[in-house]
Image 1 (cartoon, rainbow, N blue to C red):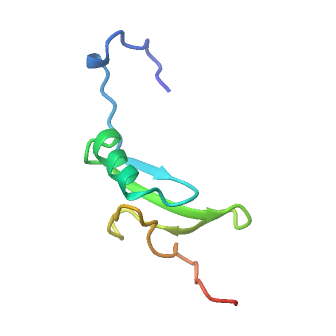
Image 2 (tube, rainbow, N blue to C red; image 1 turned 180 degrees about the vertical axis):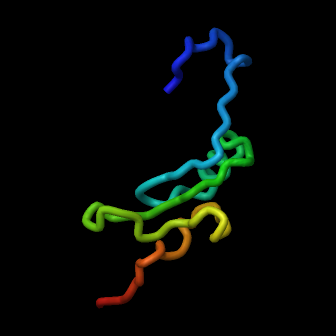
Length: 87
């Protein structure tokens, strides 16, 4: 990931995330808040998703700049996904 030598002290390391994505199950609200505040320094967009292996892609996801981020919620259906009850 880094092309230059790793700094010897943490003070000289500055990593800024603008966009972070989780996959699988939606993460718990407390974990989401930690992820946003500590890892993302309160500025990164968190895209929390839900998907099934069988579909090969996201079924539910927030879309940056279109959907509000809500801790513990993966958001509405992804674009082009039309959920229905087959039961």
